[in-house]
Each structure stands twice: as C-alpha cells, then as structure tokens.
Length: 242
Image (cartoon, rainbow, N blue to C red; front, side, top):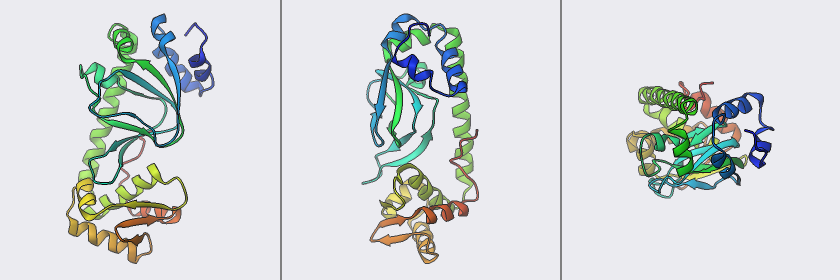
C-alpha cells in the first residue's frame, strides 16, 4: 500500500505475519479501493452485519473478536461461530454472487476493523488474480474446517452438546467472572438438536455437581465452573485449528 493513511498506520502496528498477509492481499489494489477504506472501532456487542440485508460493505477484522449469532432462539443471542484476526467478512457472499449477507455478525470484544464499500471491493476482487486466489484459499479452508467441526459435533453425545453450548456462551458473552443466561428447555433443544428430556438431565447433573447454579430458567456460571465444564467436553468443536 503506497498512500499513507489511517488504514496503513493501523496495519503497520499489527504482527509481522498479519502485516505480510494484508500487504500481499492489497498488493494490486487500485487507489480507489485504498482511499475508500475506513478504520472502524466497535465496542463489544456491536452488530455490524445483519443476515438478509444487502451486501454493501466488506469488513476486515484487525483486532478483537467477532461471533456469528442466531437471534431465532427466543430471547437468546447464541454465538455459534467465532472469529479472530485476520478475518474478512462479506467476500464469501460476493464470490458466491449473493446479494444479501447470509449470517448476522457481532463483536464480542472491543474491535478494530477496516470497512470497504462492497461495490468497489467486488470490482477489484473479481479482477485481481492474486487477491482472488488468496480469498478462495481462505474460504475453502474455512468451509473445510466448518465441515469437520459439524461432523465432530454430530458424534457428540447429547449431554456433551449441552456442555459445549454452555462453554461457547461463556467464551462469547462472559464479560465478568459470573455469567447469567436465560434458556428454556425448548430454547436449548433448538440450539443443540437434542431432546428436552436430555437437556433436563444434563442441567440437573451439572447443578448437582456444583458446576452451574439455577435461578428459574436462568443458568449462572462462574469462571471456575466454566473451566470445569470445558473439561467434561470430550471433543473440542470450537478449537481454532491453528
């Protein structure tokens, strides 16, 4: 990137590995794209992409973390996929010739992102062989990793699916030592794909072992309890794979 800008300044402060990746990615980017980049700072809990809305922006996560979330479970925002820098959002839809975003995305920590207009990014990406190859490799790697995780998840027993959901929720939204979430048996069943009876048994077992506390249908976990529940999960689906 030749023209010095706020984006260049932010990139220059990243790790050498991250700088190298982005510099290679933008090697042949036109000046119109470089000048259109904006550095965006978002506090934790900011929804910046909404499923079903028009793909008008591409975001690059530089610092912080992001989760794909599902609002369809009543009164619950469940984070089902987690991203760390460097991650690019919106290009999968562009390359798939999709007009709308397929997933809702929200920050789970205070985050720093680059924002690029979708039309400018699309025009560049489809005509830059080097960037297109890097993006294709990244997307294929992501899809293969997700496929592997889904296969592992299907093989988990029902109670371990419950444990995994609880640990994912704590990792995504547990900002303080103690985390509280409201989930009914129906909500839990929709998220995990197991029966309400299995949900009841698993939660009762955790409560009897002192690994969660209950306040109605609110589940309360401390940091220590979260760590112990993680140990109960035989296969870590949410690993980064790095």
